[in-house]
Image (cartoon, rainbow, N blue to C red; front, top):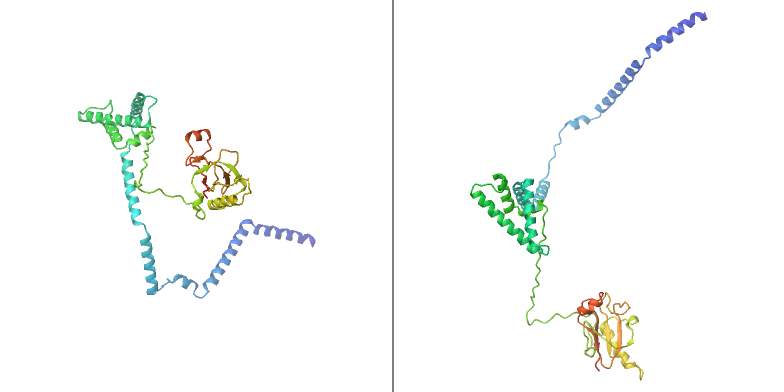
Length: 331
């Protein structure tokens, strides 16, 4: 009995293996996917109004107010367009296009000839020539060449052995595109800039007074701008700062009143009004609002208005204008 069952089982296994091939399994999976897709489509089609709403065209009606707002928005956008600027750009573009059409590349041999003649003309000027003389020589050469080309054209002759077309190109370059031609051959002369100062002041017009920060100074202070008086130091300004020139002068007056018998009495005040500090030939750094109190029986000026050129040559760090202000007290 067992012997009869064994062959039957073997036969059944072989038939199942033949049925479960790779191709048949693939076909079965594809059929399963197709059935799933069909079921999904059926469920979607059963949704109320799904395809109907997608197929219908949307008919939207706008109110008069909405239409007016849309038209107003369009009008504002059109008004915001810089019409004049656009037209100016178009005109410039046309000019550039015409310039590009005129600008034809000169033959290399013609460029070399022009470069050689320009260099020869400049060598004749010598090494000490300035840009003005070089520019005049260059312009003279250009005028001469134009005359030669026009003369050769009037006589139906070629210029320097060049063809009539090349002569016309050179004439056009010398006459209309001279700057472009010099750039092409690598030649450039800086433009001379002439600066002329105009004195617009009337003959009797008074000079503008400089503004002094702080309260007005009393008449007895005798304040003088851009002035530095010498004298014996009664109070060092390095450690004596005041808010204004008027305060510095009042400090000098107050010291003179309070000075003990035999002590130096202040009769000169020197103040630094500049926020950037004030120059002095000594080794110290003099800062804004320094107030020096000095005494001298016969006050003498150290500096007035401007430092001389000889002084600035000997002291390179000195400014042009004297930054200090000072005065001699009168009581």
